[in-house]
Image 1 (cartoon, rainbow, N blue to C red):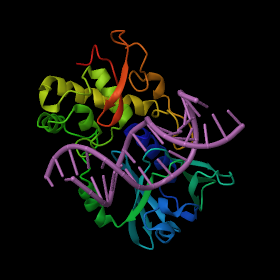
Image 2 (tube, rainbow, N blue to C red; image 1 turned 90 degrees about the vertical axis):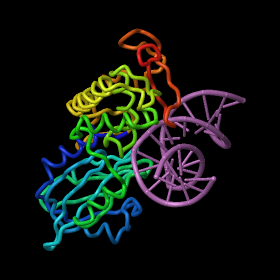
Image 3 (cartoon, chains in turn green, red, yellow; image 1 turned 180 degrees about the vertical axis):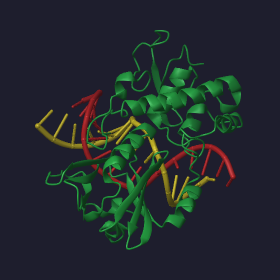
Image 4 (spheres, chains in turn green, cyan, purple; image 1 turned 90 degrees about the horizontal axis):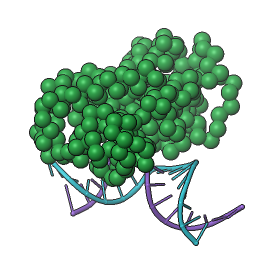
Length: 274
DNA sequence: CTGTTTACCTGGGGGC
DNA sequence: TGCCCCCAGGTAAACA
């Protein structure tokens, strides 16, 4: 699923090619992907893309049309894909939106098997409220370490729940929550306020390093994720925990188990994650 | 306020 | 081959 490294890879790939471009036309095959439906989606036609940014798993496109500014917010959720193909490429039944450009031979397609992803168009002055309403925390790569440690330390929830909570730290999903806890040798079931400062500091550093490593590998492709060129990532080759149940732990050789923690399938080593 | 449950969707895999 | 059921998990809304 697209988490911080995957969304960052998509953001960077699109930014280098479409900032400055003008959208000529949008094809809408499944209007409910866009909040407000077709009428709202038409706002994008003839608009210019002025910038692309990211916070956690949210993509933000700064849009300008007739001297008015908008923000397009895209969340890929579980199976969303956002990538370019030559404009005459045919699309399948899972492709819900297509963006054509004035001066680009490629089009952008939005493909999403489960249709969980959302596009939302708001005004720039509404962006702060959008983030505030959802209480989206600082991006994991920009967050202050002591703030992270303080938030975990005062919580009675387990660490897996906290890492998945986008109001605590933004960007981790099920894959990177398991991967970072494995690398930090911390059990997903440990309660936040039972973990000492040193271990939390270490976890924070490992979170940032793991996410950066995954960005260098252009993300993890397990089933659906692709980058902005429609190609798979390579970090799945370096996973140590996610979907590794039954395999040997790379640190101690014990068998990795899978059980439900925080309502999610959770993979960890019972021996070295205490 | 907090915590839990359900809805949103489809494809894949297991059981028979 | 096919049918049924469960599972995958990010977010938001409904609920207790």
